[in-house]
Length: 295
Image 1 (spheres, rainbow, N blue to C red):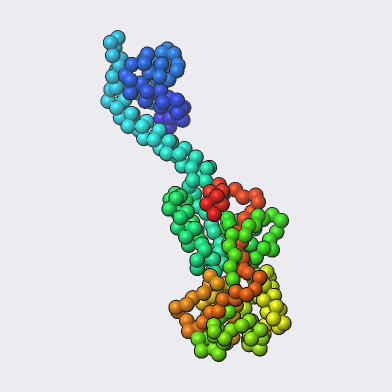
Image 2: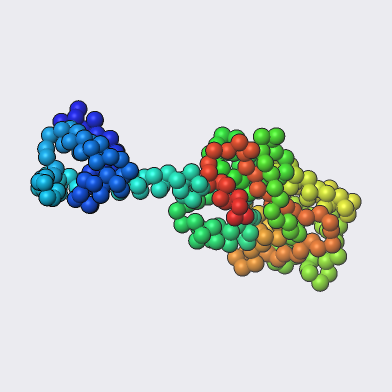
């Protein structure tokens, strides 16, 4: 029986379903755009393959017999499954369903990225998002290896195989312990912190970001004394809270509620921090097209 089933073709199921619907060879043949004799031959071939008659025929009418009624249920199930599968394939091909793997730096998740993700998932419920917090350098490596599809980074130093686009620009903020003598009211410029130790993001993780902080300090004729290095906002804030040094972060990373620290926005400078999206020029995931259009 299995060898005979292998002879079944989709057209056999389609011809059967149309005839089962019309119960009339001429009407079914017209609907299928084939001759009545061709339809009769294909139905006979189907019954031969199955080893069972599906219709009872007389000169006056065609009716489904017991075997035909049972086969009708299975044929409808197969065609529905095929239609569903083809629909899913078309959606995936068009980027309307599937999964997108996104890398991001922690500061992008404070204000910029959440509303974008929320709106995207609402508009595209069949697309799943896999989010992973990574450093700038780790995101670029993951893009090269194909373990993420797109990255949100604070670095514009990427390989020629990558596309890059600036999506967000913001001020830096100075981070101080709660009872530090420098306050919003007596702060004039970053030069007041020239002799303070700093907790900074590692240079090797984001050379551009690190250089921007050096440039901020250089504007006021000093190089920062780096006492500690940290890549996560929570670590930076705890170190500052415990008097281990000051820090400079993107405004969007600020946490006003959970630590005994204060923030001063560095407004009077042309140096801003930027958030970039990075993705491979030659990518294979159709969902990425949909996401890029969204942002």
